Image 1 (cartoon, one colour):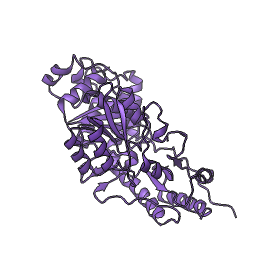
Image 2 (cartoon, helix red, strand yellow):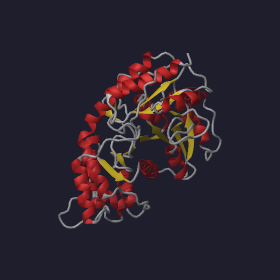
Image 3 (cartoon, one colour):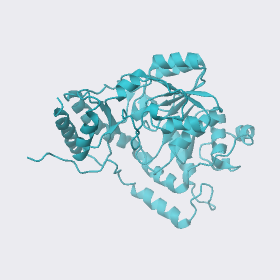
Image 4 (cartoon, helix red, strand yellow):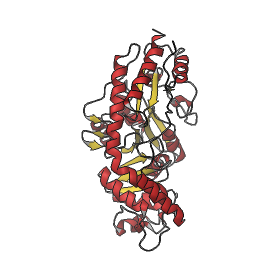
Length: 398
């Protein structure tokens, strides 16, 4: 008897809304894609997107930029990170996070994680005290939001500026407050596999007018900062416009048009993701040889991916298990692999970091943690088939 397989790609995203496609075509036909290339009376898509996203995110200021990684680097620069400054960061994250710290000249100080994929708050408190770091770049990795009450308390007690990486938590909340609204500044991504899709892109958001003005000028406004959508008063720009270096990276009109069409649907999409995530979470929580942390009730998550632990497998068995699942169409990734693969890498593979620490709990948790995307091109029946395949393959080792 043949085994059930799954044949839909895990990298296939849903189509861009038709109104976004139509507007993008109009922009292409005009030839005016650049952020400041407009004729009289023409809508500035990038500026309109900044206004609309700031309103939706419940912040004062938003700058639309070329990528989430750029948003992170820009956030650190405008917050004052200088070469040699230490920046705390959770060790379970994607490579662009420590890469951004390194690329602005900062020194990553990696913090252990707890059993639920969050930054370890005791280790954070200890390293905040011992390292002399004045910045925390907190990655809400794979949508897992730490106890933000405790995070902000630790930051305040040590005089640390909190910068949030919200690439995986757009539309998520902690105690009713949107992810990204806890720190001085936040960075979001609209890369293809995130919660809105412009191929590449991102946002920087803040309630601090001087931070916003620095970010606008630094992102390449020249002296055209008044053409941005959510901007501080002129007197704020007068303070910073000649001392903010230009790192051109503001979003173009075409990508902004694609995103404007998606923003009104993001809450609906979050609910769709969570229906699929909750089904898979139930299955993994009941699956022999697997385990999955419970989500906190005060966390309103967006389940666009899922992580579970293959407790029934040894480290040597995991590659064969992944290969068997992948052969049947259930595509799994492993953050515990000794060698980086595709988008996944363990913290001790980032060799540009001097004095990489040994983080025992991060090693332990990632050793058997498996990761899976949940694209909205899958329905709940698809998720059931995927769970069946994983459970069947896992049973071979029990």
